[in-house]
Amino acid sequence: MSTLASAGFWEFVGVVAGIYTILALGLQLQFGFAGLLNFGQVAFMAIGAYTMAILVVKEGWSTWLAAPLGVAAAAVGGLVLGLPTLRLRSDYFAIVTIAFSEIVRYVAMNEDALTGGSQGTIALGPVGQAAQYNGQWAQFQHRMQAWLGLPSADATMLVIVWLAALALLASAWAVLRTPWGRVLRSIREDEDAAASLGKNAFAYKLQALALGAALAGVAGLFYAWQFSYFSPDDFAPLLTFFAWMIVLLGGLGRVFAVPVGAVVFGFIFAGTRFLGFAPFSWFASDQRAYLRLIIIGLVILALVVLRPQGLLGKREEMVLE
Image (tube, rainbow, N blue to C red; front, side):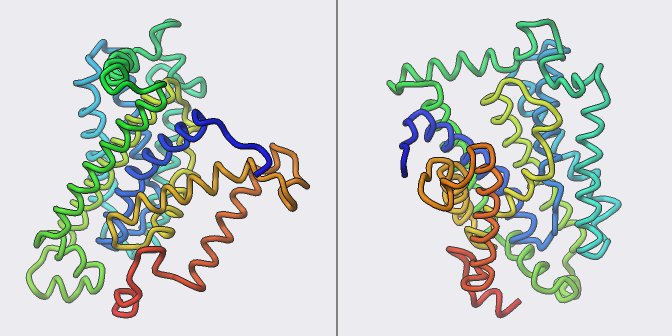
């Protein structure tokens, strides 16, 4: 590397990787365990973030009350999407989820009075109040920073996000080892066989979709707290495909493969901007942003060919499937 990034930069990258870990964990639950081909995961992230922001700024609610309601709203969004669509074939369901994601984004863009429209949350209230949802969180963050003796707000956020991510990963791992989790796996492998044993496949898939949506809602909360202001463009479909890259990098059906994929993705995506040798030196800094996506795509292609189960996945499960 010709230029070494500062510690603050890598702290920021670590925070974003933690947020993506939570987002991708929901996708792992939906696809890696229940076989749901969801290409609209970012919609639930947006629902969680916007619900909290609207309740705090427009309605004057406490952040600590609005945050769980944002997660609940994301879960309800999963139920609303799943009830009429989960009986569709997987490829049609994938198309519907993309459409749902774009519907949520365009509603946020056009409902100026509710969401701030294209200006985002900066237009939700008077200047100085638009990030009120961040005020109580910032106080909590400062107390944590003083208690832990950390050097910066990003370092504190890094610890908080990864503590939350690890707690959610451990909870998901424990839940998926129960009979409920084993039924999800059986539905992924052969839905008709699971149904023949008396399992309500539709109900289990709906539960997985709602839980995965709730996890995306949690990611949306941390995104709002980290960036303070956000707009509909921050929830473009590309974020869902970042989450897919993370799941594929780590390995399908492995809960603790998700943070591994997120860290590898974060390093590749952020670190390549500091590579100064050819062919990176042939491109301007703004062009390297697209080059990073090409590199990640090539890594995914290499994994598909050489290790389709991902870094921590098991080939035996893929052969069985």
